[in-house]
Image (cartoon, rainbow, N blue to C red; front, side, top):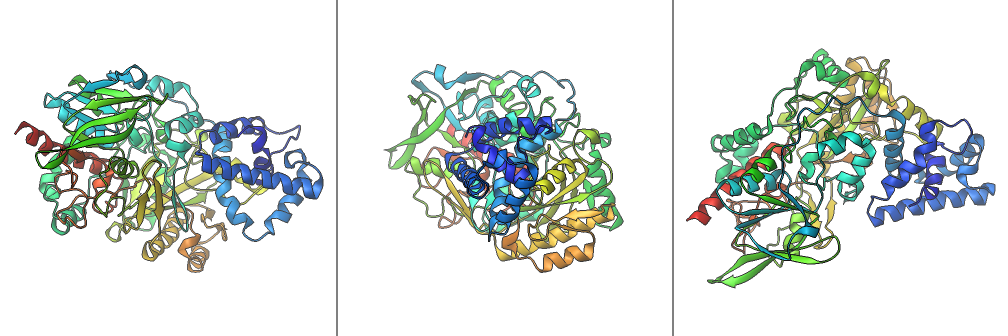
Length: 622
């Protein structure tokens, strides 16, 4: 989409026209919007183009002029007519998300970034364009994210030759430090961050695509797997490696690799301070979150790649150790299939086939394949490889559905005017026993999962005032009610269970009470039909009158689509990580989790990957 084509969206939804006195960020909005939309998948881009054309058409039919050419009062009258159309505001609530992202990035800028904490450690990286057409390795790891990195390290440390195949590219810290957040966002996320799980309501499910996978762009929050979750996996699903005492060793190993610890209190940020203040006044349990970012300067840009190198994503921590042990990483390599053959009475992995950006194919022969492409793409790859015989492959998708609430304060809370602060700072765990976790999250402007209310001038005012919003998000440990279909381009669907929806609605009330207790004069609910309230009682009334299908959902933790377990009828993967129906294929990513972990899953995924790779090493040695 060109900058010209996005102008009707900007004019109608955000009241940005061609007025002579418009601000600099308004002048640059079409450019920012065009860059963002160019990174989106064709289906999403086509939908936004259709919306833009429809808005322009409505303007021409009613006024004789294109929307962005109208003066401000005429834009307001056009918007007023459109809002009266049934369903218009509901549709536009989703359409305005990329617009807010582009506008927020230009309007609010960035916090100052500290100098590099350290130089990036060396990686042995080869672009696929320079990789030979045929090669052989003892093991091939597909995916360089949380699970794949740990598997590569374990295998390389045992003396095996290891090749890691990564579809994305490498982002050095020095590059991240020189590029604005919006550019990094569109480059480092698959489909420009617009991956969706389709359903009522649809759920935005952003995924990283880079060396380091989603660890490059996650919050850096590090939770150990709760003991009750491990006990359930051990006793109910027959996963011996999840026995809590045994699994603790794998978590210790991962935390040591990542440098996990509690952040400097001076870098907590005003958003985190307000969360602690409000929860404390209500006598609700809350604590500072542990993170893998020693030396963090509090620039709050974790979700677009740390520009100082403080956050120890796996491309700065685990993969360098794997490369030092002999592993090699091939970038811009999309794996098309795992090649298998029948040998000694069993179907066995013999090679991995991948394609370069120019369409040429290369093959790596191997007897051990570790699949770590993520909860959406691992099932698709196994289908392309003819390894989708298990009926539960792609099912059991859990995502940690989440809602957000904002409180309006008198002083700056987030953004560059509020001082340093970490992105995800405080957790309120008073209801963790029922599967609900509240976290204080202050993303860069426009990149939060909270969608500002209203349209037109009111939305522009909200954007101008966004720095005074304190933000809380709540996620629930959900029933695995989603599914991943498809083999070439996976399609996720998700049906929010009614009880999970009720827990999210209760969380809206609880988050509002925390913000009011901390001094907020108004709470923005995230519920389009009732966007703001000025008291806890009014918020409770809104929640009582709202159904869970009216919530604006986001999610960041897809898991479970190739779950491990002892029951061969329910689990596509054996309890030790081996794929059922094939030898020499190990799964080592978020797919493995039998159920929702109830916490940010990075440590869990990495520990599971370590736990399933160890026996693979021993089997091969035997």
